Image 1 (cartoon, helix red, strand yellow):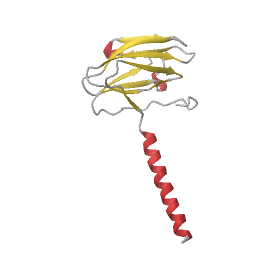
Image 2 (cartoon, one colour):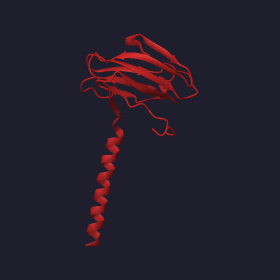
Image 3 (cartoon, rainbow, N blue to C red):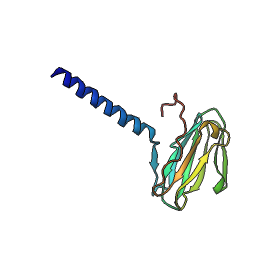
Image 4 (cartoon, helix red, strand yellow):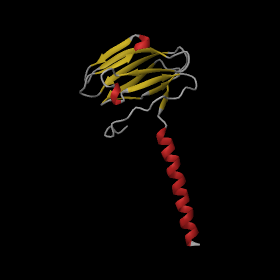
Length: 138
């Protein structure tokens, strides 16, 4: 009897671990459909939230606060957006969600470090999960 309880506990822990691991692999997507403005954080080599889901053609004002002591940018070449975000300052940009699929945004100084994100519409899924600074608490 005791052995079967131990086996049941081991099986449930194993299942819990696999569910947790698979959900941890899925990037977090913020649904901004119907919103006119959203706050975005730029910090040590990441944007938060990094993945925004909206409706096709939706215009969204982003207030981007650079919480780090490093110069960053918010860049979307397809929308002719390339704005520097000075350390400890805020900028406001207006983005437009694509008719379908994904539009990538990034910091032109730190994209190779994973400082990027995406504007998504429809059932598009994130193409990449930018690495996070493990000390960020996000």
